[in-house]
Image (tube, rainbow over all chains, first blue to last red; front, side):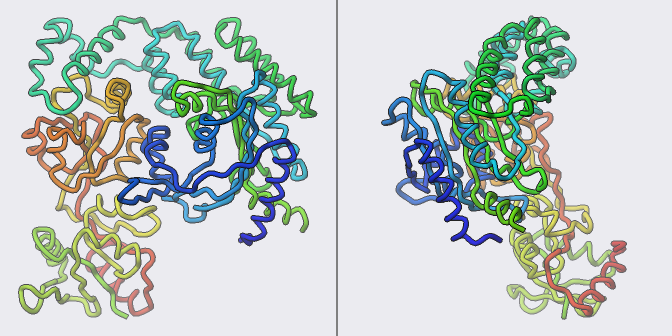
Length: 369
Length: 232
């Protein structure tokens, strides 16, 4: 077990590294209003964050990360562009593995605004790459933006596309939806019966037959979804060739230049991903300009899908290959959509990352032995 | 060192537990006055009976203060984090059956599966401005089940009783609760989702993995296990 004073000293060194890169140091409260985080991450966050309360403010959460409060702070009064750095404890409730830390120090670097997202992505990645260069870590990268653009390119209804996009971060449900929209999974029997009944008797009769209306979800809500179901059943399945293109993207794992070349081939049939690929190209150029060896940089199209739900563009993580037991030493990504949700209509391009000083310390001690 | 056996302290669950042990040749009885929580075990020497509320038995097992305990598998899975590593389910006892299920109003003709629930929750949130509320007292089990199923845009609201009434009272849109016959659900105009069975619970004999047990205690346990034909 590393000593907390040593970890804090290490954190201070990493924090200084970020300050020297031009970031302004910021602080956030440890107690965060639970409602904001619950609305953002859903009920799952309760399994991963400590909830406490007082009779006046209601439910509060011990900060599970800095990103949300830093975004809120920036959206309230930040300049453009703005670079922030922070250090402090985050708290993660554990229900499964007693060996995982429930409290640890994070040091972060966040970059808001600017007019060149590719350069911003590259700046943040290169900062962590340089910070961690003594340890020979493996970098993993991905791009949720490519996945979102690929879904957008499917020849199907907007309803189906938004259902798929909503579940990009839940791979299993995403797969189930894709199988159904692709016609590989037949409609469940009760749904078939419902659709037949709707067609024969009409919406009113079906609703009248269903028993008394109770609860806040009204007859109108039910009728609206019935209309959606009826409309959807009239739609042809997504073509097998398109489903295969999407699966091809999802399973893509290559070094970055090869991945990009492969995606360019796919873009011949799925042109909507081209702008995302142009951004990827620009990012690789910017990374190379900052001295990153992009020829060896891994790219995994599905990377970052199962972490926290807010990344919607470039994603990255740094791993100690000799220590598969350790979590990523650093990780981050782009989260433009989060700024839109927390900015009440306003949005700002944003990308950032965090590093865990105690892991840096562990690797430093290991290297010294 | 004695072997501590925790059993429910009252009601049908207690009676059925005593019957089950009697059928296996171990006679358990309450002693003293009717109001005194004390008991005896005949048939095997060295077993100390601990009468507890069924709801507290999981906690006592996890803390290692009792070696064996009888309670519902739903309570163990709900109340003990990482329960497989802290207790061992020795034997299902064949009574106290209850299904933990997800139920929605019967008037939701468009919702039959978890898939439907997820889609309805997304539309509900967009229209009503808050997440679809599910009333329950089984927070952990329900949350894990819905996470596995990839259901989003819901929130759990706590309900410690009369959960079937929460929909009519507008404090929740759906419920997750235990049911044995479904009678109360029907009376409250609710229906179970076709894939909404979260856990099929019954009274179960559990063994603590954390309770300290010396040679004498282990010998008592082996004698009891032989008698109950537990095999280990």
